[in-house]
Image (cartoon, rainbow, N blue to C red; front, side, top):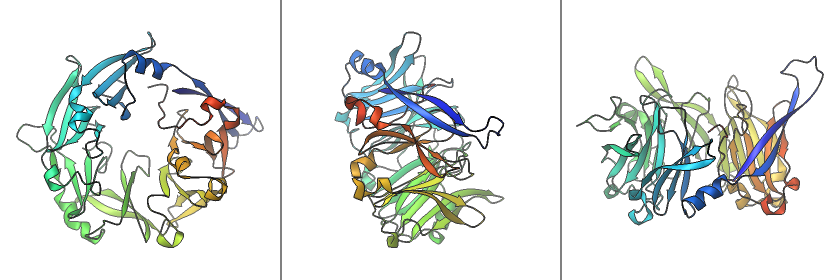
Length: 395
């Protein structure tokens, strides 16, 4: 585990306004033993999955590790500079099948509870549980039977994705795609987890109208999910041979209506888009109302900004240094992630490329990437470390 420290260097006339000054971020990489101490103290092997969660109504965050022998939750105690294990659940071990991609263990924020709960798919459907602080164990909330293995929901071609599709303060929604049934939407019971009530309800109104927007068979389509307006609402991005379509729910006097918000021929077949190889992200690189679209293809990385008045994407930058002809390969692409490292509201790009570990920020004034961490200044032992997750220091 490594810690980044940020410093700002500002160039420009001191009488200039804040908006016209040029501020350059600079990160330093310092190795910390926090992660090593955790692995050694609890004799843990490499975890299968890692996530940051908030299982209590306080502002504390926890580290969740799904390991070979089960699920472990840790709380960091800054005063003692050590980890405290607050939960161990053996049921979520590899021997029970939780090493398979079709049985993910996830944590999702429930607005009505002001905390996150565990949602996991099991053989019979979805299992819901919250963390009991007094008992330091999981308390089962409900068991759903709509998505069992008997309906082939284990098939990797099928898709189940939770998200705040209906708004940040409404119950979670569930996007499903089945190779035989097509796309459907569901929503968590608005009344909460009540006895003798299904935890998941079908969104019948939306499902009946989907045929006008989505073809009955969308097996060749690829779906991504992102908050394109940074308002806490999850949007659905569909990519196919025709390009990209972005959908979302809009509130009307008749209730929620599933709507196509944006359509573009970017990422279409004629552009040379390679499904499974090329990548796209919606991330916040500028202060625009819409998140920026970032595309990584064989000829480099492009940054786009959506112009709502003209209903088009404007290309802000094309970085050809990340083109395959300059040595960029799939391993480099798989290492690329975006996160707001310094808590400034905009994201940085982190990746390990041909030159090593790199952190960049996008400058909207010059429309160029700026290096925040120079890989040439990292020692050889850490230079080609692969980033997989950023944990804000305030968590």
